[in-house]
Image (cartoon, rainbow, N blue to C red; front, side, top):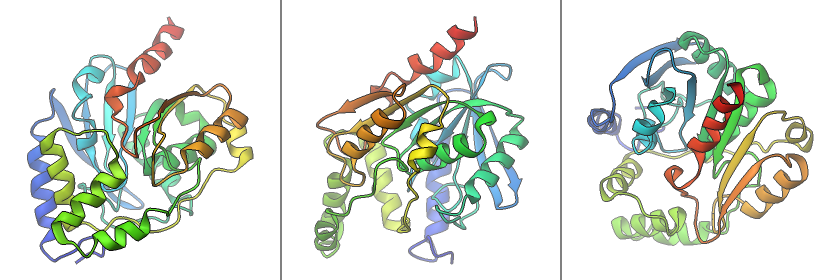
Length: 284
């Protein structure tokens, strides 16, 4: 059993549930497994084959289901590539790469090469914000623009929620739901997706390693269009620091603050598509 799973049966149960949800991808899609130096990587792609590519990276404890709500609308304009990050409850290699090693840059470059993507805009949420930022810093030729939602890698991690988490951990399923709501905040998910994420939590061990924060020099060196959505009541990341560092080092970044929202800001609630389409308009 890989260490990311809570029980010997967890990997099978998670894969079965995930594959069932993927049958609901709202438009025709292609699924493939790409071989990399860091193991196999699962990708689901949709949209016209000749449309501009768009790279989608989910957050911790997630997979391509993160994009079910927006896949249809975005596939009208782009060739989406929703990539399952290794070490998460998707269909990629379960072995994790350290978030401080730079290994994700090599891995993602290999995935993009296998997909035939030379340059694309990236949309990344939560944990993968740091992955997308690293790619933009170290492989700027691959990243056309960035749309980040509650991203790690800019503001520091916060831990004031841990005492409640320890208490909730003693309360079984009721405590699991309290912790879920504490982290997600006031934003609501479709009931089925909320139950799915709780199911994932029952079977999957989330990351606990430190996430690298971009240096001032790295942020200041970003030379690309960028938008960032953040929740004002995010308990996992310091949203105020995220906002202030962006204002100081990436002043061109368009920041969308949802004051009463926690770590979950629905992608569909942000003008991400408009931001992405402005790229196409500028080419015309």
